[in-house]
Image 1 (cartoon, rainbow, N blue to C red):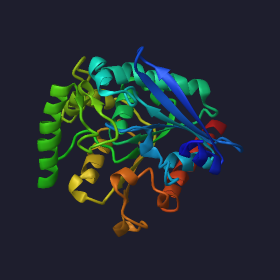
Image 2 (image 1 turned 180 degrees about the vertical axis):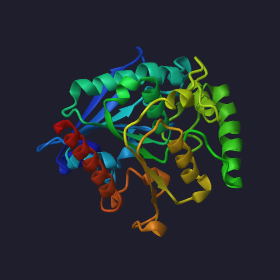
Image 3 (image 1 turned 30 degrees about the vertical axis):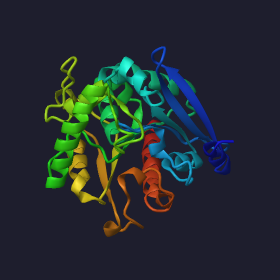
Image 4 (image 1 turned 60 degrees about the vertical axis):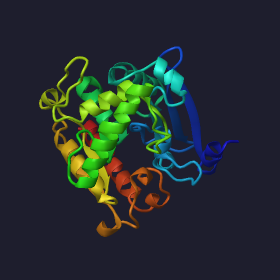
Amino acid sequence: MERADLMAVERQILEERIQLPVTPALNAMLRRFSPRSGETKGTVIMLHGLMQDSSIFLDEQGGGGLAYFLAEQGYDVFIAEWRGRDVNNNQLKRENFGLRQLLTEDLPLIWRAVAKRRRHDRLFLVGFQFGCSLWSAFLVRNPQYASEVKGIIHFAPQRQLLAVGRLKVLRYQWLEQGLLKRLARLLGYTPTKALHLGRVNESADLYQDYLHWQTADWKDAWDNFDYKTVAAGQYFPPSLYFVPLKQRWHGLEHDCRAFMFEQPYHNGRMIKLGAKVGNQQDYNLLDLCRSVQAEQDYYPLLLKWLKEISTADMDRLSH
């Protein structure tokens, strides 16, 4: 047995991997974690960020992670991966893809695949960094899907990166807007792994679209869809925002607040995480959804919020 399979068995969780072909060579994927027994309390779909994969939500070696935790608590958990997570650099160059493909092909395919398999109609979404922006854009473009969602949980969401210090400005202007942008154009993909910036190399077109989204006007390059204007006339489900305070030069708190206020009207709550605000430890960004310690620290807050949303939903249906 692989380590991930052993961990699922130890935690009394069933794990399933579901390939979702989007082209003859590229697949999206779902990793499903569900309780072996007991009541199913809801369905959760998780979406990773740029240059990441499903491992951002679980630590297969250490045994921790939000996906494991929620499955143990009775939730049917699907971690979604968009195309290109498991291909080589030549395939990324040959089949370049961007936001247009993710928003109109990958995410609808993932949504339909979960709808066919889920055990519970109460649906929650989880996003990590750029995955939060993708969920938001997908729901703004497709309000019929937003009506199915009971709640959204965001981990360090980023859409527009706000300049809040010299180190942050240097990193994003020199590295992201400079070096990495030029390398992506030259190579046809981002050399993320070689530069130790993430777990997977990313499509050059998607990276360019990511940079385009960082401007003040939140619009898509291919059809000029104006998210801010459309969002102003919509409503979103209740949302919970987690942001770590460690390495404050990243300005994650400022980015999270800006993201929160440009969403459609909704009931939002932001929770800061760090030793200075009462947590057991300071959490690195990449440990937010992978830490074993978090299961006794702030995951219970998330679980309580899910229960509150579910209770309110049941009360609404009973009247």
